Length: 212
Image 1 (cartoon, one colour):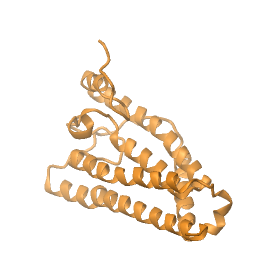
Image 2 (cartoon, helix red, strand yellow):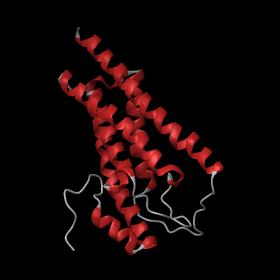
Image 3 (cartoon, one colour):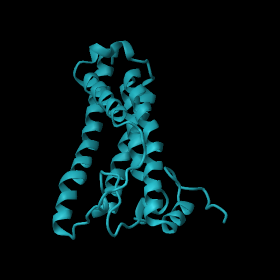
Image 4 (cartoon, one colour):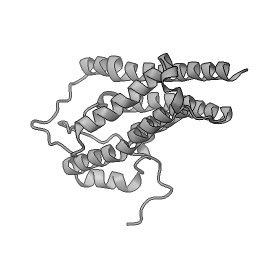
């Protein structure tokens, strides 16, 4: 297999991997989520929700847009960013593929665990409860963990430094978003959430609980 054929293969792998992740994301985030909301008691957001965090929305939008544009260009017109290609060994790129694919069933597990409690918005709701089953029994933000891991994995598949750079910027956003969410839940749920934080890790399970 020559270099051009190998690059085409990895671009196809990138598309398939991203496509599978996208299908799962769309199914649970849109169709299943809204179907569940129609069939169950609607959980309303509290009046006048408090805003958390001051990271400019335009900054987040620029990073996300840059990432998406880089991915689209890599797939459709890669010759325009060939200058950013890095000669990763094929084994490294296949490892990125394996890591990315492993996140897909984890994403489904997280959405199934959350069920009707999933929300794309950072807002407290009436009768807000902490989900502590499934992956949430050990980790507070497994969704962010999956998104971080997938972003890194597919950028490695691409072996494109531009996509890797935007992935790195995306990854840097998640600790900020996690702190926002944790502060909101501490304000809203108090000691209950504080105790949950003590026995769980932010993105990965704790090796042991904190000593009291």
